[in-house]
Length: 262
Length: 339
Image (cartoon, rainbow over all chains, first blue to last red; front, side, top):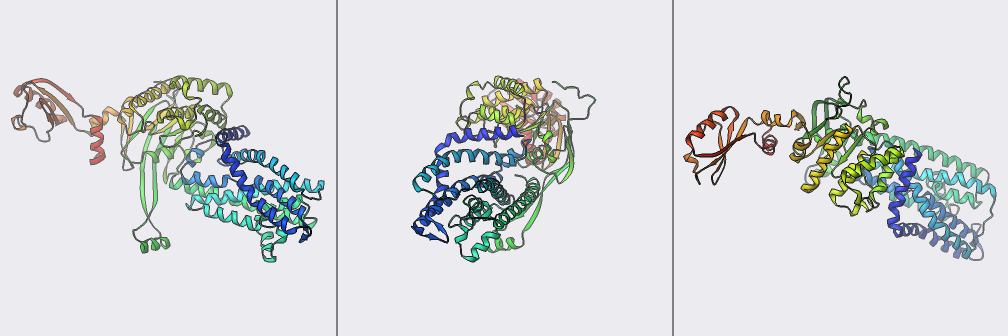
């Protein structure tokens, strides 16, 4: 199983090497929005602070967010719908491995490529923009599971939405909606703590914050004690729900697909 | 043909009463009707495959033929596990296909003339390696199988070019290689020669025949090219309107379904008008009259007597009695039905 996963990843890397520039442009594109808000908020903060965040802390927040956004962004959620719509699901279903392997292989292969591009740029920006962060080992240790869970949540949530392509040809609209909600509620346009009260509540309840902002807040030390544990609990609960949703939609979707034919 | 130790075993493929009914939405014309169908969608039932039965022994090569929309691809998709039947059963290599058990998927392969399993942007060799791992083929077996296939398909030169730069025929060679790397017991081929030129068709046919002989792989093939079927399949299964119309030898198909013979007569004199011919028995007709070549379509039972009469009354230079060409038989069945 692992061997076939690595083989799929290798095949993808070989394919992508044909399109180096396309993928780096894509990675750069994902970086642009956080960079804009980095400059907006750090400029606005100036020499004082906004809601307790200084200029340097905004820089740190957004530099971490660039990496977290890249690591958690699930590009395959878009391609799974295409597979179903264009009838290429047949080829995937004929293989003796679970079809989600294709998506997972593509995810991991993608992360490696994007991080090769992102990490040097973020390091360079850190040298120029002088982020300020109260770095603590315990936060760094908590960041690792928060990041892993954020990726898993974003992946299975998006994958489940993409599977709606089994029923509707316009399932991508939901993925676009999800990306907008992530932009608003997952700490991209502003850190969640700076949102108006109503939106802040929505951000804490809905799953989107736990896909991006939560690990960033954990690493930059904006969460402590009860907030941290509450965050993990919410993240874990949403992940379980997203996974169940994926399993249910995959089973019923596949039953439908094999009933109507692809 | 190799029929490896199957004499006492049950057939490799057994299909009983296999049926597939699709529910197709009815979309009337016009905006108001469209809105109405949005609220109260209406469906009609279309039976693509209707209670077919057959069994196939290991190592056989069988052609699944029939006009467009007859239910051939639906049948193949059910046998390869891509479709759930509405009724009936099938077992292939001891498995129920649509359960899609990994052990089953490792024993079959399906090549669709219009779909690709190759990674488009990289050379075929890299795709083959990925597939070798996906099917968990041990390294030494993989190398041996690949070398054999490359050799049989004469594709040494293709291995380093990206797949998207290959011609259609070269790509089909790659598809066949990709489908056989894990040594499947059953190979489903849906229109494998679609759009290929004559010499590529010939080469692929030769390959399939040879590979079937060598490895005893069971092959079920659909094709619209009767030449494919004639060259490869001793046995054909004809499906029409979702029903099994004929199952047997291809030659027998013409005898059974086309109850007439073609009499081709070369006359020694130049042109003859149809009126100059002796009276033809009921059911016989002039199929063609070009220059001094006359072709008659004659009921099978009348053929001997009419042949004798023609030899007496006409100046005949040459006369042959043949079964009608398979294409003509097929056309007759497709258009008139095979009652």
